[in-house]
Amino acid sequence: MSRIILFLLATPVISSIGDNLPEFKSCLINCDCDKISEYLFWTCDENCNYYCQQYITNLRVEKGLKIVQFYGKWPFKRLFGAQEFFATLFSFGNLLVNYNNFKKIYLQYKRNDNEYKILYQQYLILLGISCIGWLFSILFHYKDTSLTETLDYFGAFAIILSNLNAITVRVFKFDKQKIIIWQILLILLYLLHVVKLQIKWDYSYNMKINIVVGISAMILWIYHSLKVYKEYKKNYIIYNNSIQLLPYETKLLNKLNYLSISNKWITLIPILNNLILCIGISLETNDFPPIARYIDAHSLWHFITIFPNLIWYDWNIWDIEMLKLTNKL
Image: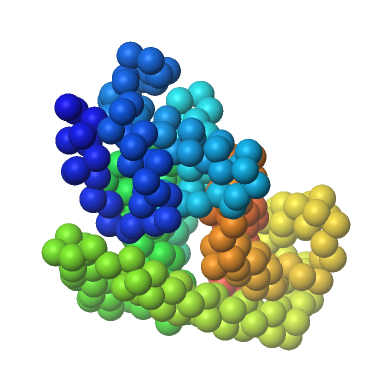
């Protein structure tokens, strides 16, 4: 009886080919929890849904048919209890990198006076929210529920807004009063976004607003990077002979050399990082069935996002230290 209730109540947000297959519906109705493997934190109904997705997918693969989605998502194989193991692992990688960057920026924050603390504060906000967002991503990819999915989406938008906040304050050099007004506007936008999705969940709207905010931040990062490039070239002797700047620049150059990237790209690192992110976004827009039912385009996107942050915040520290020398950036 519980299997019939599960089938009747299984009304997903997105309907797909897989969950409309008669054999899948039959499997759900006839599923016996006592005869399938149990997983920690997974209910009987959830285990049956997983089992039937895997069973139907195996049958289709044996018949040479294509793998199809169920409820708008691919039928991943569990690994170590995780629904999407590699997406979970890569999300943890992002969390770790952002946490290490948070500690790095916090040290710089404590060393600086109030004039430059304002800039470091924006990066601390971005990194703090990023850590929370990636924690939500870990929970979501470990186990996909309506709650973890909602947290993942809201966390992702918070990260994107925080990125826009950081680069906007850096480019336009807002004072404290302007920062407060600007951040109140961002918070209001975030709250309106959350309320709108809570009233009616709209994947299309969510994607569009993330793209608009993300591209806006990307444009500002590129603009700022080109401005730094021009200023660095103009005052090369000052910057190149600065003892104050030397340790930060050396750290950047060592990372570039390790990656076999020419030192001349040092001022354009934000552009390179954004190009890497664009490659990752192209994966998201060209989805494919998961390789071996473990790795899909979305998990690869999470893998790619690890790398820009390995150098991005070293560059931001270097950028602020340059600002101290001439105050022209």
